[in-house]
Structure formats: C-alpha cells, structure tokens
Length: 142
Image (cartoon, rainbow, N blue to C red; front, side, top):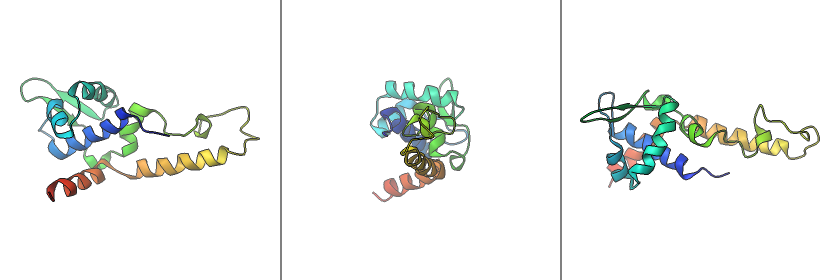
C-alpha cells in the first residue's frame, strides 16, 4: 500500500496550517506552497476534499486563507488521509464491511486484516499536534 502524493501533501498542508496559522490567522495556499516547495495549484485540489470533510475552512478577502476547524491535537493522521485516500486497508476484504466469496476459505485474510489494524493504529494514534511538534523541532534547531 502506498499513500498518494495528494495524501502526503495534505499532511504537509495541515502541518503548515497548524504551525503557521491560528484561530484568527488564516494561511494562504501561496504561503504554504512557498514554505513546502509545492505547487499552489495542486494544493487547491487537495484543500477541497479537506474542506468538504470539515477539516479546514476558508476565509475570503484580503488576508484570507485557510484555518483549521479544530485544535491540532484533535486531528489524527487518519482523519486527514482518508478524505483523499479512502480506506487504508491493503485489500478490500480486510475492511469491516469488505466481503468476498472466499473469506471463509481464505488463508490470507487474517494477514490483510492484521496489516489493516497495524496501519490504522499508527495513523489513528498519531495526531496533527504530534507532527507539529516534530515540525518545530526540525525547523527551530536550524
């Protein structure tokens, strides 16, 4: 399983918003793009599903940009990845609602489910706040 470019860039966008924004300090995509060395046009495509999922909100007008809708500690990495990636199961039958005709006889289903549980434990056990701490540690020591 690989996380797509959109998923990876969504995490970078959210970390940047958390690190450089605030409750009343919207961050423009152009500023994020400059700091993260990303295309602002590509970020526009990424911010739409994040906005639809209620993870960010836009502020229009002069000084506008994007704000988080919650505190960084209230987001998990899974919350951020799933609107762009969908379920993070390695195969469809590893999900709770996944089913195939061979599930009863499949010798690999437990492996796929174990991988899914492990990935979910990591992405749902890591918060945006955790990543912001890492971001500040890397950027403040330089």
